[in-house]
Length: 285
Image 1: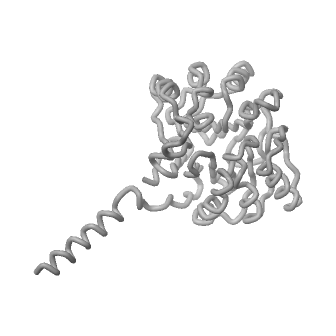
Image 2: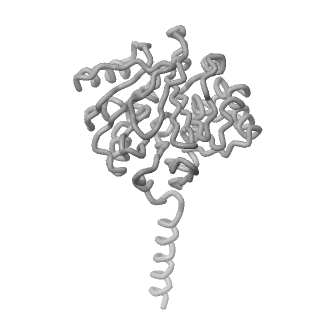
């Protein structure tokens, strides 16, 4: 009887562990004919995968160096065999670090990045990987539209050149529209860039906002959040990171704007699916 009780206890414990959020099922594959956006969990960094209704694959950033293989594995699990558009928002290591690994793992048709360089080995590795694939980098800047069918994808930033010390403000900011639904991906764009985007009179209003700079208070100004007016806000951030991201200031700004906030440190990979009329949200845990 004691052995039976112990076996039952062990079975119950095993079942409870694998039913817990830490062991939640992997994100489901993209739905045909819909726009699927995956904010991949890459710790303190950014990596976003987009599957368009027409079946094109877009990758925005690739996390830091140690997450390159993780992103490759995630993309393969999601059925990716090639990448039509790769976007490096800016040269910071937590965004561009994994890109060289991803470039060597998939056939990439086109690479976009803002016209700013950096002296780090991580950025040089990215440039070398692009060259090895016999690709050239197309400039990502306000007004450039990606050659994709079924959606509209246009850069709204950077609107101008900044000092090389202001790498975050150089961030490529992409707005994607699928029917009545819209998404804004901001990289690490900070308040100077945000103000310039507002001044440019570009349409910024979007249902889903990838919050700038991991929720730092150097981004997400009240004016910018008001202009975007997001229903959903996603913060890509590492658990217990040393930067204090996301800050209380940013969370309060988003709360005041009535945006529903999702965080990769709490929910793992976050998936948004748009049929052009409504948006559904799924979390990994």
